[in-house]
Image (cartoon, rainbow, N blue to C red; front, side):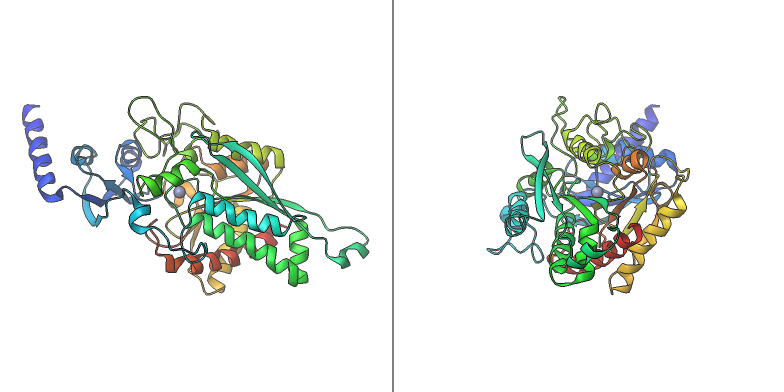
Length: 402
Ligand SMILES: [Zn+2]
């Protein structure tokens, strides 16, 4: 025992000599489920969006070498990371606030939706669906209509569906809100000039949640660019719950953690967090949403239920086919080719995620899309191409579920 402890100390000493004092992106080998759960439970930040069998990237902050060694897994340093503090002052955007060319603060994002609402009062409305822990409003915007003139003469009106999109649940995934803004704007503007899109917009009630976790999102600008969770004070010196491990379906299972310091901390109970409750209540109020997409980054993936178990969902063939429409249209538009698959078997089990809950409740075609790149710090030059390929994906996906 004494010898084991002694070698551990030596290892820790060697590791701190290798690692130095700055922030690092570390890649750990994750050979099996037991290792994956240790990674999920550890107090190092996740760099990857999901713990993934094979390898997972972690964030090593100053003084965290011991935590890395306790994982007892092989690791390599991928890169040095910039200090995540005060990102806004060092990397803050210019004077313009065009979401397609630069990342925006929470208030700027809502201001852009307000422009669309003000200019299209009969087609765009909004509702506050919740309040974050720090008191910020959580908004949902609805886009619908208009009724194209020719539809009036049809003997029976075509059926309508309801679709929900969410973005910004993980605070640091800055590409997610602009992708959703682009989809919203494309459907709005195209339906004014193109009959086909007018019909599409008339047949769709499109609900979007611009930023589901505004406290965390603002915190990534003001304090820590690498922050993932909300800003719940856990009462023991740690902060934050992973809102996308807080939904009820499979809550508490593998790929989430009871460690309050972990980046996959699931919270004290299903729907303990107002940011998850807001989307739950929106989904219940909307009722029977036909489609749902939760936008994340990074990894270029289109993921469908289940996440909480490796068993197939009852409609897994249909979920795969609908997902294929999204994925293939992105490729056909000249965008990147994303990987399509069931969350748990493509990456690793993740419990308490939003698309599992939507699918379980309403048999919704429910997806999590991991956006472009190999890093959640995505250059601003990648915003527009990521938006364009996902508009193409969304367009085909929407038609496939009408
Ligand atoms: Zn995410």
